[in-house]
Each structure stands twice: as structure tokens, then as C-alpha cells.
Amino acid sequence: MLRCLYFCSQNIKLPDMKKMTLLMCLLSFLFIMPSCKKKVKEENTDAQLKGIDMENRLAKYIDVPLKSDLSKLTEKEKQMLPLLFEVADIMDELFWLNAYGEKEELLSKTKDEQLLKYLNINYGPWDRLDNDVPFIEGIGEKPKGANFYPADITEDEFKKLNDPLKESLYSVIRRDENGALKVIPFHVEYKEQLTRAHDLLIQASELAEDKGLQNYLQLVAKALITDNYFESDMAWLDMKNNTIDFVTGAIETYEDALYGYRASYESYILIKDHDWSKKLAKYTQFLPELQKSLPVDQKYKNEKPGVDGELNVYDVVYYTGHCNAGSKTIAINLPNDPKVQMEKGSRKLQLKNAMKAKFDHILVPIANNLIEESQRGNINFDAFFTTTMFHEVAHGLGIKYLVNDPSKEVKATLKETATTLEEAKADILGLYMITYLYNKGELKEISLEDYYITFVASMFRSIRFGQASSHGKANMMRFNYLLEKGALVRNAEKGTYKVDIDKMKVAVVEIGKEILIVQGNGDYEKAKAWVNKDAVVKTELQSDLDRLDGAKIPTDIYFIQGPEVLGLSK
Ligand SMILES: [Zn+2]
Image (cartoon, rainbow, N blue to C red):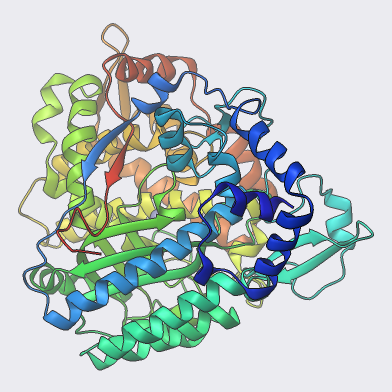
């Protein structure tokens, strides 16, 4: 019935509908048209949604057009892009289903432009930059497991569920007609959308001039309809000379705040910057050396990071699904599959145009408010770019399996704290590496002070993502730690912060060590206690952060994006 309502209130798109649905819809339309009409009327009048504090919420985002120079693309590459945009839009549709449920049903309940924009930014009625509080009157709390699980699921019944796929990345949990839990693989639950995406990717692959890209597009098409990404992950790492890149599928598990098991759909369309990528290639050669140098006992660094991984720079031209929800990602490290990482390493993608937008519109204004005046001159884009880059390198280092039981993944053992710990590790070890390389005579273009102070300014930026974000929580933990160790000193009068470089160097090593040990031991209780204690914003910091809101400094970016912005006709 809902489905029929949906089609009744929209323009019916015949080619998009399955025959059965069409038949059902037509039948209901013919037989129960009066009730269908009545429902439409209700949706248009009675059920109008009311937003809460829309003006201030929207002020957290600054609109920035997402552009790139496409002149270096070949004709075939330009023809391929519209197909990729379509696939990306399907991933967007699927992420709505992961995170909330029926998008159109929700959006049809308001005509308020501001509210519509905010619903789209958040992929649902909960504010991702405000600890997921509902921003619509009368809406309850966001279910911890988003729409991956029944909202009323209990820990006990999940425990009792006997299904080998119950912890799988690529499935949802639903109730059967008797109310019992059942597991449905993504490729079954989202069959119609995934088949469409598959077909478009096959078409796109036919336009690919680069053999690596062609192979990858074919395999990722297959991955979508089988929920098995192993081969496409491997093919993605094998592809080296492509200019267009397309990251797509069910990838990150952050949206599942209940257990952290389930992946969400997303897409990035990327244009590789070959010149910058070459410049960065040289840092990859330091990976084994960096792993060896980690400040922990040997048993925590026995794993060998893959050296086949690379560090590349891109302009991102389209974000959809999870990566477009709330705060925008500016660097990625993929694939996530530890088996692929052990065999081939991983690829770090630096999204330079997006980084520059955040640096100019957010980081610099934050520094001007929160960093002590004498240190503001140390804030620069190169430092921001490099610390973000090494955050990604650091994800590939450290430990992925428990020291005492290598059959167990750190990620699964640390459950919902895993991503927070992993982000904290990546940030801190990233800085540790910069220090290490700097001392070796690399990275000398700017000073160590620049790296540290820009890093701290960036921490304030990330803390503003709030507790709903693993990155937000990781930064709170680190902020509290650095403050405690005296590496950060607050000027009580001005509410500004000074970085003590020497103490910072010591603190970075200490916190890095602590994280690696918790991870290597798979110490869930300790991780949980740490997150509960330190992943909070205390009163003083809150008052400082409130000044940023008062000064109307945005927290994140809303990208105006799509084929038209790029000058492509769709
Ligand atoms: Zn990260």
C-alpha cells in the first residue's frame, strides 16, 4: 500500500517499475482508489513535518560547488561519467534505506526548502552533527542500528539468532511473519537497485580505455549483485594508470552503531591527479620501516603492512550515500577487507579539492578563534594536507589481528569502540610518522611546529562532528589526553590554546602506544572505559566551541555537485 501511495503521489515512471508492482499498483488504484486518494491528502496536509531550529542547523554547513578540471579526460572518459553518476545515485538511494528507510515517504511530508535540504544532508531526521538528535518535532531517537536491524531488537534475541551471516557486513536483520529475527543478504534485500547498478557498470566498463579500470568495473558490478567484494577489491588495487576512479558499494561500517558489523552504500567519483600522486609515491616506500619503528613491543608490530599499497591524490567530483552524509570525508583508506590488506596493502586517497575547501572555509577561521595568536602563523594548507595524508597511511600500520589469537580481528573484538580507536590511532600515528620522517630529513618544506599546530587546529574541527561520529569521538579522546599531559595549554582569559611542542612529541608516542596495546590485546573492556571517560566534550571546551558557532563558522561543507556543476550535460 505504501508502495502504491508512493507511486500515486509521484509521476509514475513506467520503465522503472517491475511488472508485478505495476500490476499491484494499478489494481489497488482501480479497486481502492478512494482510500489511496484519501491517504495522499493526509500526507499533503495533516502530516506536514516541522523542523526544529533549522536556521542554526543549516548554518553549520557552508555551500561549496564541487568542481574539477575535466579537460584532461578523453572523450570516452567523458562519456563514461554520466553512467557512473547514475550508479552513484543508486548507492545514494540504498544508503537512505540503510540509514533510515523510505526516503520519498519522508520527504513528501514537507515542502519547506530548508527542512528538505537538511533531511537530504542527514539522510534522515537525525542531526549527524548534533549527536543524532532528531530535528523534526515528534520524531523519536535514531535507532542505534539505523535501519539495518528492527528498531526494537534486543541484545538477547540477537545473541540467540542462529545464522552464520548474522555478523556479516552485507546483510540486514528483519523479522519474519512470526516476529522472529532473520538475516537477509543485501543482494536479496536490494536486488532491484543492485541489478540496475550492475548493468550500468557493465556499460561503463565497455567505454573504459584503461584495461585495469575495465576489469575493475566489471568485477565491482559482479560484487554488487553477489555481496562478495574480494575480487573487485583486488582488481581495484591492481589498477594503476586510470584517470577516472570510482569507489562504490557497501563499504564503511560506521552507520551500524549497534554492533559495527554492517556496511553502508556509498560512491565517490574521482579524477586522479597524476602529478601529485607521483610526488607522494615515495612515502609508501617508508611503510615497512615505519611499522618497525612503532613505539611498542615487537608482538604488537609483527604484521607486515603491504608495500603494494599507494598514496594518490584526486579531485572528487561526486559524493553519494554514506560519505555524503553529514561531515564529508576528505581522505580515504581502502579496501577495508583485512585479507586484501594483508595480501596487497591498501590505497590511500587524498581528496585535495575537498580538503582545500575545508581548510579555507573552516580550519582557518577556527584557528583564528581558538589557537593562541602567536601560533596562528603556523597554520598552513601543506601541513593540513600532509597530516591528513599520514592519517591515512597510519590506518595501514599497526595491528589487525589479536596478538594472542591471530584468528580474531581487532575490529570484530572491539565491537562498537573499534572505529573510534582506529581513528584515534590513525591520527596519532600519522603525527608520529611525520615526526619520524621529519627527523630523517624528509618533509622539510615546512616546520614541525606547522604540522603540530595545524594538527591541533584540525582537532577542534573534528571534535565539532560530535559524538555521533567516530572521528569526533577519537578527537575528543585525544584532546583530553593532550590537555591532561600539558601538551595543550588553555589561556583561561581568552579561551585560546597553545601547543607545547616538546610535550606534544612525548604525548604522541605515549597515546600511540596505549592505543596499539588495547587493539593488539583486543581489550574491549578497556576500550569501552576509555571511550566513555574521554570521548566527551567538557564544559570549558564546550564554551570555546560555542564561540565558533557564535562566530558562524561552519562545521562542514554542503557540496553543490553533479554533472551540471561540472559542465557535463546529463
Ligand atoms: Zn580515518
